[in-house]
Image (cartoon, rainbow, N blue to C red):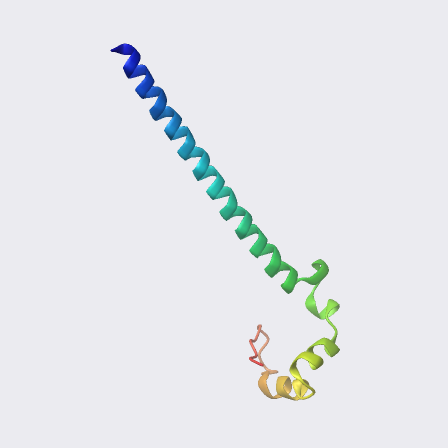
Length: 89
């Protein structure tokens, strides 16, 4: 009887270990995905670990949004506000 109990206990412990490993793998995948997303956003916000305005040329935005890009920014931005502003293009 003790032998059957030990075998059952060992199978249960083995199953728990398997589930723990699966949970660890899933958590690592989730962590890696989150870290990759954070790095991607960081690279967009700070290209080459520098401020965008020091790395991205005005020509890039002109070719992407058209030659009226500067006029649109001038019309949208409130020059008397000193906090960050979001401009929809």
